[in-house]
Image (tube, rainbow, N blue to C red; front, side, top):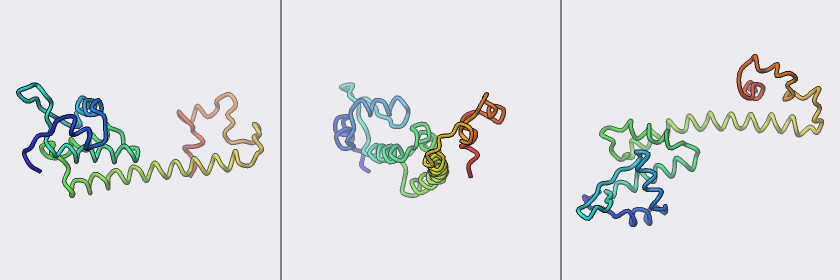
Length: 147
């Protein structure tokens, strides 16, 4: 892109976000600006691509910390190129596939258990008298064992 600079208002409007969101992203180290002689924030047009990556990642459940780590993996903190995006998205796809698989297992297990209508506290595998499953680990032990 060119060496032109964009005001914070122009970037916010173009990206469809609030100015406060730009401040937030900047405080998180996801984007950067500089101050002109009038002490106003200015951005390079490349910031649009970084914000687009951030927004796309957030829509599919990628955390801002994960986005930051991905940006830090780029040489010289450059704006992602098409090739960079292919690598970033393929890495995120693997993580998302694992999340989707877990959620599908959880959905299917809960539907099968609750969907039967028994809600029996003596037969239901979710029932855990005296926290006997606590010895097997933390969290929803049975649900995490579902294959």
